[in-house]
Image (tube, rainbow, N blue to C red; front, side, top):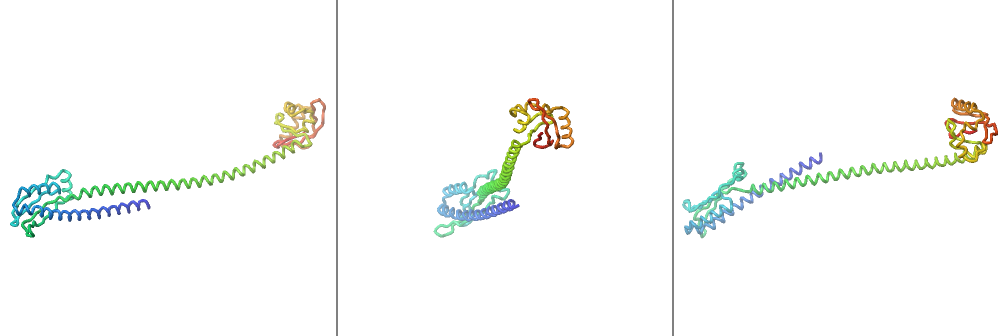
Length: 297
């Protein structure tokens, strides 16, 4: 709305400027035309006094061509025509302006004096051609207004772009801050998780009970050192190559263990007979959790 008000105000000011300049220029042109006809009177006065019609005719025809006179007439003191001249026929453009009353015909007159005595009059019909200046001035004003509007549009777009950049920068700054906070939280959580895993691994490895993690199908995932010692494995690779079902003395014991684990989700104090790698049977108590981190005999 402010942009529209500014545009209207600028248009009104330019229109007012145009009208003022046109009026001032028209007044100045008419004043200059009246002064010019007086100059003509002074120039032809000697020809009129001496009845030099040929000299006056040459000057009058030249005046018509130079100053856009439709006609110019010199009369003696009795009102008799001494000499006259006519300008060229108006062009199509001039006829158009005349029809629209944009090029009015102005009558200019001045007494002709010789030795401070009035010896006749000079009268001209002048086609007031200030319209040409008015058109040029109007075109200039329109161009100025268009350039002004274009400049204002560019400034406005630049301002909007700057505001969008500022807003977007603020949004990105907020997002970055949020990401930094999330990264910080993630780092803290990661560090806490790593410490927790370190504690778990330490507990898992140093546990005095044999601990292991396996799939329900009996594939060993990992185990601690006590597990290796209990069953006589040389290393974890050998332990992983041996299925859990193979360390049970009887397959039914494994099935029973899995049945309890499936129903209760955990096994506690379950006594089972196992077989070491050297074939020795051992009796152990199993404690296990179906969804836990580890289970062990």
